Length: 79
Image 1 (cartoon, one colour):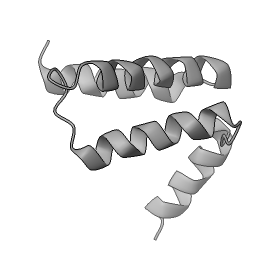
Image 2 (spheres, one colour):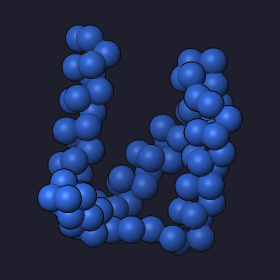
Image 3 (tube, rainbow, N blue to C red):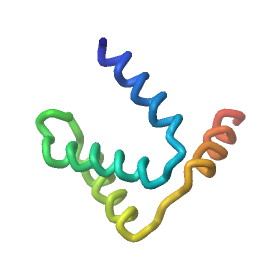
Image 4 (cartoon, rainbow, N blue to C red):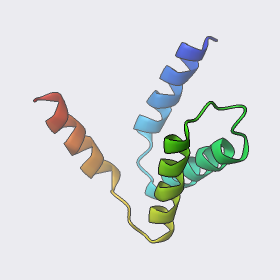
């Protein structure tokens, strides 16, 4: 499977997830991997900083539920 196909499939799986805790766990896993293996994922310093900030927000309980995100995406797509 190509990288494009894998990314597409990964996005589809994430889109189907409704469980906030599962999404948070998945995000934490990927973010931790990215921070621990910067040579495997080519991230800019800005991207690393954003991931670290997001992890801090998660720890503080600053979350947006999946339905709110879906609603915002619909609004963006209709502009």
